[in-house]
Length: 321
Length: 186
Image (cartoon, rainbow over the protein chains, first blue to last red):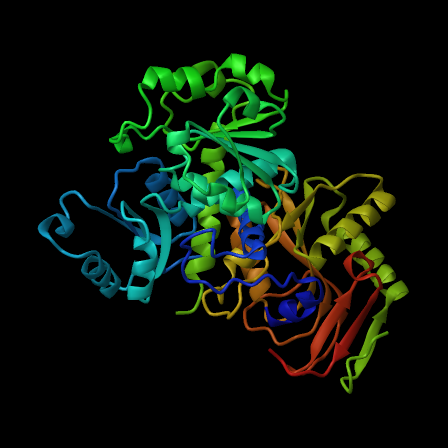
């Protein structure tokens, strides 16, 4: 192999990956994000093969540590790990030692003591992933920490936009819905801005965090106006489980004001793409005819999610500890 | 030509010789396989792809038959992946045809330890069950670490383990030559 390395060096891109953790898109450079996207393209091809497996992480162990319920993200990480030939163990909070009072750090230390290379964690506390990464030697991939970030979701959204629109530079993206509680929104904003997209956030004033313009986004409270001239509508889920503070009068009123329907799409560009991180509340933030319609790329997001997570696990797990 | 400081480069093949060598290999492939029936080329990223594409064009000009081409990136199959300090740049893998029952000619620029070819064989097995796999290389520089040999060799170049063989092709290098340089080996 060494002669190949020597031969290839002239045209080799210099983007290097040195992080054992992926905690947020805020901390990544534009080059690092692009490196993940390019790497994910190779992995998308692997998932299209008849034998959907490469030996890249053979002998490595990855642990899914989910303190919040999740089916899609956990399964997506699980498939990603398996398609890289890594061994995977699942820990969930219910029925585990956490419910017996063990601290997060102790739980992780115990998992690490079993020689796990990378821990994929979802937790309801913002900042928990960073705390964990500082506490252990194993790598940490943030699969959603509170209302902070969900970096792999942000990456797969960006991957999907790039696949459809060819670039991110100058692309107009509108995030619609509950921006306040959305870690998906935060990861999208950081990533999209770094790649040169124009980002608008739209939702009821109670669900738009104050001073969000400081992140370089435009704020719009009128959905009818916001959908015009957008290339991408990324619709966030109304997180009914987090709606304890009466942020809007009723689900029905929210749907009437901020739900995306076919009528709304008529105002948009004909080639607008509609995205949603799932799971969809049909008839609330998104009507069924839009979710299943020709502008929807929701299932492409799911497909791309596996490729992006393969890229992230591949890059972080192979970094020397 | 930019010569890297005191590190002297010795040219072992020039542009026209590379073209003649590839033409000979194209003829040998046709001779050995008695035509193009069931034949396909697989180039190993990145210079093997350029060479495979050119062999395909030469075969077409000789036999007026088109041979399918595939691209293979072997990095995910490397046996030292968990040991190398930096991540290798991944390239596209694209085999747009069913390889079951085919005769595949695997093409690479330099045959050295044989580990790249081992990785490529493993990768191909994940795509199906070819009838046979042959190996074509522009340069065989010796020093094999695995029991692998090439079916078609452009030029055998005796080297020491410390030397580096550079294959430069118009695509992507802008000029054509094969040179050997003494160098600190990686």
